[in-house]
Image 1 (cartoon, rainbow, N blue to C red):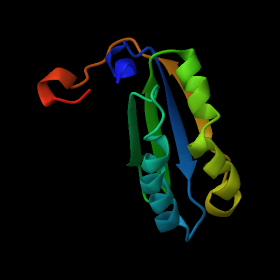
Image 2 (spheres, helix red, strand yellow):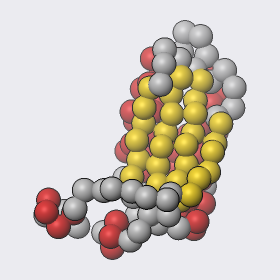
Image 3 (cartoon, rainbow, N blue to C red):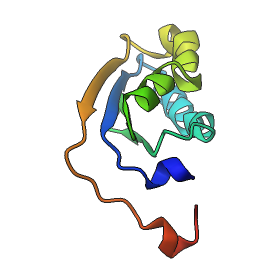
Image 4 (spheres, rainbow, N blue to C red):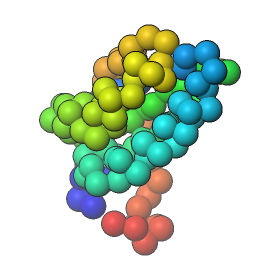
Length: 113
């Protein structure tokens, strides 16, 4: 994709704290969220991670502010809006940041585009 060749400049770190007893459901939600971002051309990198027994995070990066804002209005945010109250002990913490430096795999070497 053309957007993957662009420089990434901005990102998001979204922290999710699971309700007691809902940790595995939150893990499943994060794992399934990957399928929701597959069709977002400006979501260049996306990671769902577990930081602790009940703490999860999503880290993603974009070529520009428009891509980041589109993602914030996208399917993952919508799904969190629908299920957040039942799964999370508090609203997600969303941190926006600027990317100063990055190393991504060379797409030409893998044959991907």
